[in-house]
Length: 288
Ligand SMILES: NC(=O)c1ccc[n+]([C@@H]2O[C@H](COP(=O)([O-])OP(=O)(O)OC[C@H]3O[C@@H](n4cnc5c(N)ncnc54)[C@H](OP(=O)(O)O)[C@@H]3O)[C@@H](O)[C@H]2O)c1
Image (tube, rainbow, N blue to C red; front, side):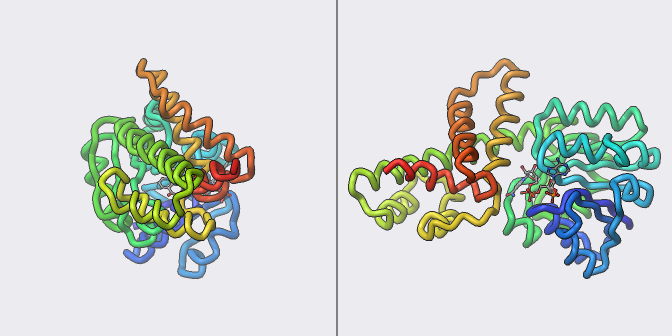
């Protein structure tokens, strides 16, 4: 089966590689072609535009930074949406707000293209090891079509409900991820300022009941003050902004998220946007 894949960053490049390992013929496009080199060396077909991808496939995946990037790829010059065959399927794995997913589903429907929002839980390592968890919104028949593809890239998929429900669950997940990381960084920073060693703080807090399990995977980054991105801080800030939009759309207040979102923005202004989001610790530590 020929599968299109657009967006070959940290996540998309690894997801596409896992499709290749399962013998799918993968046709790829990325704004920056360099990131496609190893996939091409392993047999993927490069397309010069999203339009060229669309003309060759029945299923197309997008794993892009944000709504703007998705709009560019889908509807910009040489975009893919006008060029997919009727009844083909677009699976958007990017993290976006649910109303945007629903808008994409409607635009796709206008072109007789089926749509799933299927963002993922898991980061660089899980993408590499095909251990992602897909949170899916859309029709059950379309989810069924994608089942083998989800299985090639992940360990689990959850059909949450109709269009926009996959991204809804994903935002609840990332609200917790982003605020928890910031709270942990703040706790360690305070402890150190009060005279406790970083070593003791990390060992005691991470060994106790209050720290979330994912925080242990960030321990080495904090210890070594080296934040090579698994999940770029700028996309965490973007995700919390997506949460703000979703909260506004649904009339919910998200005061904790709003504060933390601005904290990540301040860190971006200090040049930390492309670092891992755990670099929020280094940002908070600057002050002393
Ligand atoms: N990393 C994680 O742990 C993780 C986990 C779950 C979900 N996500 C989500 O997955 C998506 C991709 O994240 P990532 O970590 O793979 O990020 P990334 O490495 O920064 O990749 C971003 C991708 O979007 C493309 N892009 C960015 N701006 C664009 C624009 N204006 N026009 C066209 N293409 C554009 C990039 O193209 P270039 O290569 O040309 O820059 C690249 O293909 C995001 O929605 C993120 O929130 C990430």
